[in-house]
Image (cartoon, rainbow, N blue to C red; front, side):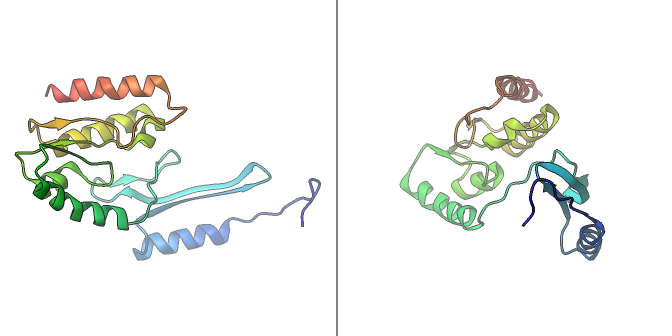
Length: 174
């Protein structure tokens, strides 16, 4: 066990080699590693892509969504049942893209959703990118109600919420 006076010799070369191997072999589109020792960052490195489709690289401020895949699969199946139940408006969270939701429920039903509330902690350019993606998926259809997947989280910067609202207004006018 280390005490507060022990020095740790840290060599990140094995981590760098593993990252390079996984990304170059296609096992991972991209990754970010961080090693912290006693509260000090000893290693921080990014490799590969955060978004393959847009070729957006992973950066130190990239947000990652880590969750079980059972929820979106179950939610997609439930959308069909919700449509059969006859709702006029169906709400989805950020795990189901709007275009996928409308494909399941039909375009005559309004869809409410679906910004991940954690995204409001991101830099403003990332919030704008996410708002733009959601509105692009809405495709200008009437019946889209833009909202957060599960409300505003404690500690969310108020200026980021205001910026998201401004982006929705600005990008909806195109």
